[in-house]
Image (cartoon, rainbow, N blue to C red):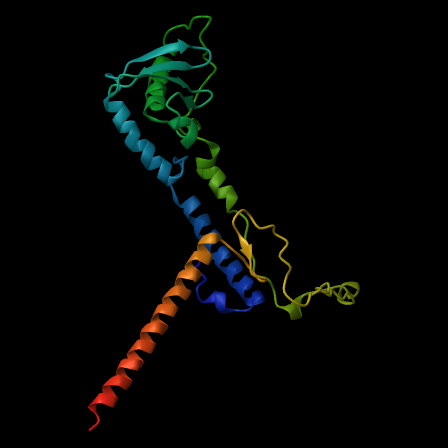
Length: 253
């Protein structure tokens, strides 16, 4: 955002707000075009569509090797065994969750959830030909895009940008009522206290107060060391001055 409004940050407040509103209006227009630019058959946003397409090909190629066991036909719970680590994961297609937590956090199916969905589709096609048992649910039909959260649907994405953001008109074109014009908004007076702010903090253990500031013990140690070094430098300077006077007195004829 700082790079986008790099030049506008130098403006006054009102021109800055106008620039921000215009930029948001342009972004809304671009996203509105992108939301309707895809195919009618595409129900998901492009990012999730590509990800699930790649995941579908991976899950489809390993579907025969991925063991899926039905746990609850009414709640659509399945146990999927991962072929890489050998662990079992529980997938619930109705609640859109998996025990690996990837499905729960990302809100679109993981590899285990997609494998369970492929098993569900295979069994659904089987039910179309064979009469289902009383404990089977034939009324549940889950579409491909329904595996994901609604926030990834192109329909909801288009609804988020269907409105238009208009620029604020000029002040001359604003129709302000007379009783609003008569109002005078004056900021409250700010009381400024003279002098230095009082420091009411109690000194901790080892601190000393010099009248203005609180100092830690190590600060006083450093100050004493500096004073000692200054004294040594002063003594050396006096000795050097004495040697100079002695040399000049002996060198005279």
